[in-house]
Length: 266
Image (tube, rainbow, N blue to C red; front, side, top):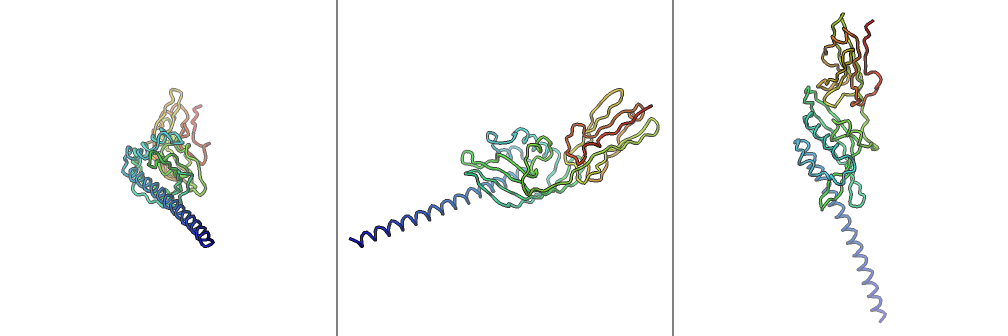
């Protein structure tokens, strides 16, 4: 009788031990499978982005669960495709963390691209966090944080993206106006005296005289230390007036207080 009882105890503990072991292994395999799915979705999105395939790209984004403004993100990707030619992208997955089924994918990246306006080649590095959730059995993107890997061309979208620890800190551009008048004729140039490049694809400026106030667009970015081609300023030189670069504050600058120049006619 005693032998039977001892055997029963050994059987129960052995069975429970094996069950716990199998349960642990199941969790590990399940987590690895979910992580693999997220990495595969991210790679597919990256390929669609490089190919400028907006429809395919947004098939991996959940409009219903997106925690930021979905339409702003859509417009940002559309603008990226319009003003940038992607030359190469390298990515390195740093880590994956979970919140239940959701997955946070942390990625270091390097992107080389070209402005379609002036063919300037740009290189940018960053560290970003991508949040994925399972929707009808498939992982989809529902939020972004850190450096702007996607959608950096639209200022409204950049305001939507929170910062994270470890992200790259970029030097900012600083735009000013240099006006040259010779009597009643002249020109002006937009100068970037900051340490960073502009990346919006274009630069807005406003010319105000006694007769009118008009907004214009310089269809190019300016690298650090670069200036625009000369722009006609005859009206300002003749009648006086004010020229303001980036009047709507679309470009983040290291100094926002030196964007205008005034000519006074006495």
